[in-house]
Image 1 (tube, rainbow, N blue to C red):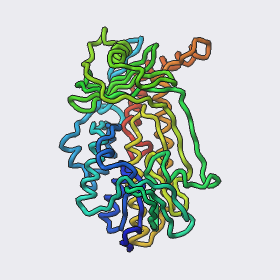
Image 2 (image 1 turned 30 degrees about the horizontal axis):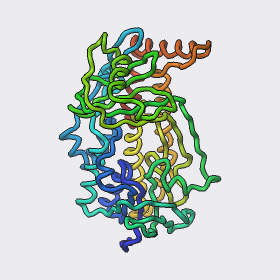
Image 3 (image 1 turned 180 degrees about the vertical axis):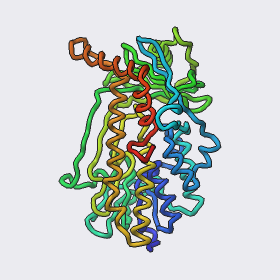
Image 4 (image 1 turned 30 degrees about the vertical axis):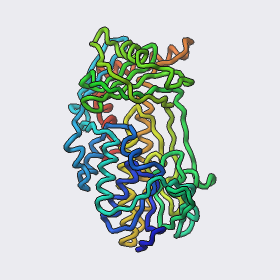
Length: 403
């Protein structure tokens, strides 16, 4: 296998959960690989992302000896609380469906763990190295052109390239337009994503459905809480000072009826437009997509990082089979296997968006959609069959066998 400084058997673009898990698994299997990351080390270790790990994700990490951090510092979570004009109700989803629960562990902590394992084992990673494009993917020696940390141009040759660099990364940009199909949906909903230096106010994930818009509460640690506020599409994050944020959260989560929120400084705020898209297929010759490069899913169902981990394990197994045993079967089926999970996860995400967001209009169609939403909430509150369906899909990663 190749080991020269500008070559690797697998060049991995992006040091998120997908890229770092893939790097760990390939290195352990004896495959020469390198991770190219456009950000700096501290940036990837501190950027705030999701925090709910599905049971299947935890099993993958434990199976490969990569769960030491989450086993020490993560905590189980199994309860949702829904608040609306019709009152509130709670679901302990660990007692429903497949009887499983989430593990709360911030994504930046998971990334830090995976990075430490990779580097400690001698893994190669190049920070502040931006991939510009991927060329010659129709052949057996693709190249990745980059700008290196000192600003000079560079090039990496590989046998395979794994694009784990997000929806705007070089991997997606390098796909021939005629060779792929992009499925895109703008849900017409925007959220103000918030991190508050305040302890959780509920012992559950809180979903507030209100006439002024959705509000969400998700614990991260004992001192940090993630909140979401539905906002207008043209909102700027700086338009919302702390006092306005807490007033609106308290209103939409009905703090006057169910108890006050724990306040604290808002350390991070950003506007998130709820969009979904999927690339088909996830392979073009020697280039493979995983994580957000393969599909973007709205944060309403906490599937993004979990899909990334699942895809990375599937891709690692397929690459190991090909490079160490000469068996390309896994690579040939990789795209179809992942897309099965992705589309099922997208369907549940769409259901959640419809459940949590009312219509902004006042015409007959808007009232009709609001009636459907209230019916969904009512069914989730009263129907055991609906609760079992919700629980199985809420903690699952998109397909039977991955829950």
